[in-house]
Length: 101
Image (cartoon, rainbow, N blue to C red; front, side, top):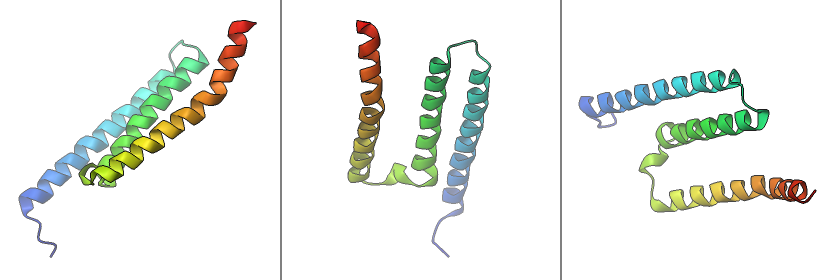
């Protein structure tokens, strides 16, 4: 046996059900966004924000990163910042050229 009490297991199961429900609802919201009358860029941005939330929930709860040490969070933050720089780099050049012309 792993030494967990019944109450600890129930608590973990509750957490998994809550996160699973949240993931389901976020998926429904993602589909609903596709039916909104907004520009394609805005729809993609909203979908990406929702996808990041879903990915964060999965990483935090199902991969147990929520209980890891500060170093893990620092590496995760560095990865997110690097991703943002990579995404905004090409967009910055495009936005600058349209503002000038």
